[in-house]
Image 1 (cartoon, rainbow, N blue to C red):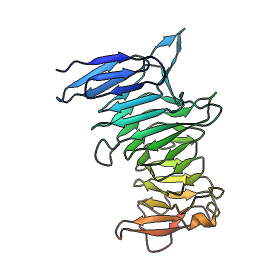
Image 2 (tube, rainbow, N blue to C red; image 1 turned 60 degrees about the vertical axis):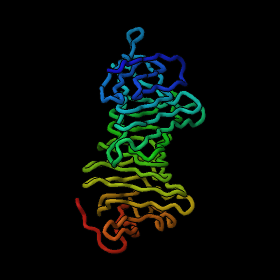
Image 3 (cartoon, helix red, strand yellow; image 1 turned 90 degrees about the horizontal axis):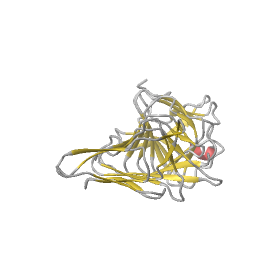
Image 4 (cartoon, rainbow, N blue to C red; image 1 turned 180 degrees about the vertical axis):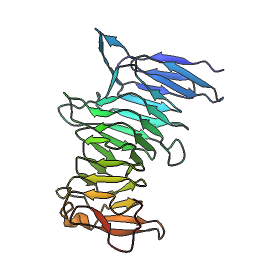
Length: 299
């Protein structure tokens, strides 16, 4: 069996790496790591979260590299991320990794965005990285957000609440629970925002679409709504495509004015049978409906 080496690194800019070589690096404590070596053996390395003066302390994890089942866990501690000039979490390897602990993403006096770069480690549409608990803003330093890059899928199984929200630049971010979004706008910048089957989520913010466009993927039986987004300019020629669309499943605002005239010409549902995008229109109550042809509701 290959030996496992765990190296403790100081500072807030080092990477935590769980690699198939059997070496792990962490910038501080509070981590459980699991991975396989190239001989198929499973190894475990454990860092336990610490307490000071009887209270739970924080642990910075600003720059992380998860590989082949790497997992970040806590025994009562809170992890902080984003406290560097270019915070980044990366997911690589051939099997999914996860964050099992709650995360607070720190901002500053100006907006600070953490990059979540998730590769397609599964080779299919299954989750490549899973947040099993909340991802929230820091109360004193709330100017924070996440930019999802990489073609893989990140699954959110806890509440998301960041003041500056989420930008999906590549791949997919899937919300896997109901009532899982409590703050922050969603910006589609070439990527996909998805909701799991039979979930109900009322996003308390607007929907933004950049010149690169984006996709909303609705799970079977899911319901998703956004606030009135008519005040947002959907940039350039970017369009919004809704996949697995069903009548009564998607709502923007509560009136027919939830989208402006420009936006109304940029929103479509994907007809899988014909492999074609077809226009959607907004009803007087804010729900979207098929404009051409028929959509069979699954609700």
